[in-house]
Length: 124
Image 1: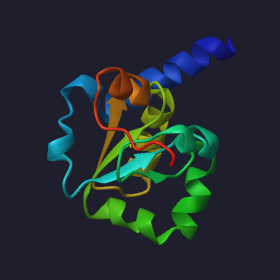
Image 2 (image 1 turned 135 degrees about the horizontal axis):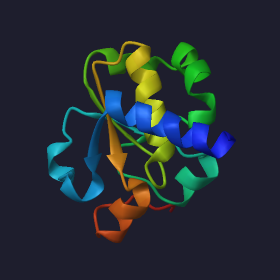
Image 3 (image 1 turned 45 degrees about the vertical axis):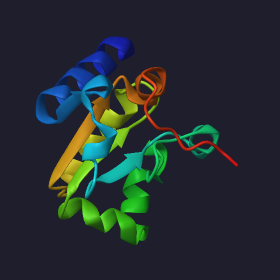
């Protein structure tokens, strides 16, 4: 019952949020975008899209109140990603409900981004 409800929740989120496959995103065309990595801090620390801000999905609503950088979502396009695309989908839906101009969930997530050879900022 819970699994079915969770799957339904993801389906509903996908119907109200713009989704773009990681393979179709050109890293050179992200100028002016706010890039949010909604994975947990330990995942982010292992590598992330250059320029991304880490805002874990588990704390998104609270950080939206506390983090000045998140206020930009109401004025610009926002690329939201996680590891595989599920947390980012829910996060993009939440951002839209909070007034974000254009949250876009990256399908396939960081795993697909990394696997396609796109730029990754790794720890020093």
